[in-house]
Length: 161
Image 1 (spheres, rainbow, N blue to C red):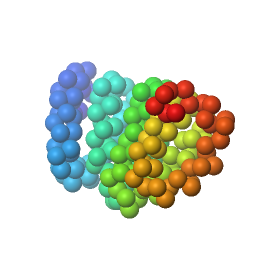
Image 2: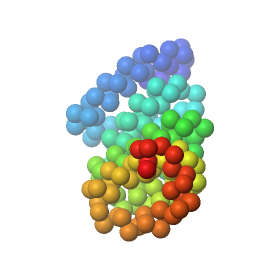
Image 3: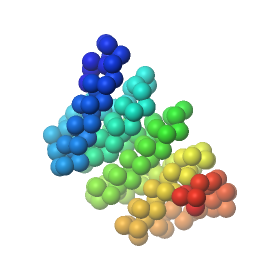
Image 4: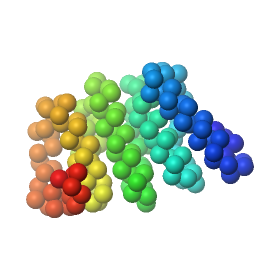
């Protein structure tokens, strides 16, 4: 994966990451659990590399590395690239569904995103909340205060509504 740093050829990195993504989806997440920092996004990487790294991060998170991954994903939410911000919010949804033991702490971070008052962040957070609140109905009371008239007016996409 480091070949792209010297040759500016990201094709090899993308192929390696695609194979790792497939392994992680098939249950090989334990093999990459300790190497999670390798999948942190670098600012100069192309968006297709960033996207697949975010997908992998959501699936290799565990109770051992969750805090560092959540902190890193939280930084991406305020990224200039709205697509990266949306994908990082989706990773929060993946983590919450995969790891019920830490879901309470991670949903607190989603509440923080709603208070940012950024349109695309609010939209994507509401989309992710739709799936989370279906699985964890006891979390609904924690999000009711954030569903004010002001915050609902910021939701412009139909999926968020």
